[in-house]
Image (tube, rainbow, N blue to C red):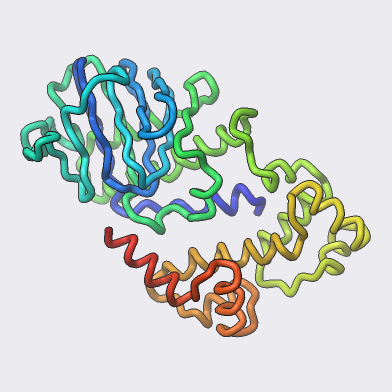
Length: 316
């Protein structure tokens, strides 16, 4: 497994909020649902994503935007159009004055708006709960990225749009997995683009020595790695590996391994049945005490405190 595969292995939508929205200009929707991550794609017409900080970004048909929460933002026909609706946590929509809109603007299965044949149609899929998307992944994403339609080719957006109109048995699971696949496909295409400013560990996979070392660390985080054993597996000296790895990745092999193990542990601790002892074994620590000490030193909280904090975020 390479580092990107390790990140993309994280998305696991559970009852994701998927919606087809239909509008006529002027239209504007304020999003303040505090969701972890949202994907938006224009099916018809243009729109603008207007973050509270930063410049508005235009969306054209076929473009896909990935918006990292929990900060609010606005989607509108023009950047200056005042919001007519506000999306709150819990899939609740209302006017800016607080009047409920869910029933008023219901147009059928997962469809919401003014009329079915409106000039602007956008598809949105939202990871509502923290823990569905790895914090490792969220940390390397900008607050807003847009993948233009000409930059990639995928049947996933029209397939997801078609499936959203269905209300068959098991449809929620089908939509969750399609949303996961769409996110993975978009991010894989995004990371390959020069404007993505991909992190050093991603670019390092092009190096035959450091790329192999990264794959070994990602595939076997619980292995008792040392610089010597890692160098032996990559076919270079300890000094050469340490120097090359640090130059390309920006930190030493063992510092990277510690960060990777603790990132895995942080995600595993969100699983309700995972014990600290079991997590410690899975990520290469000999005891719960050893994991707790490393976790506290690097992240500033104990594993138990991290789990409590994660549960609190999921409840928001």
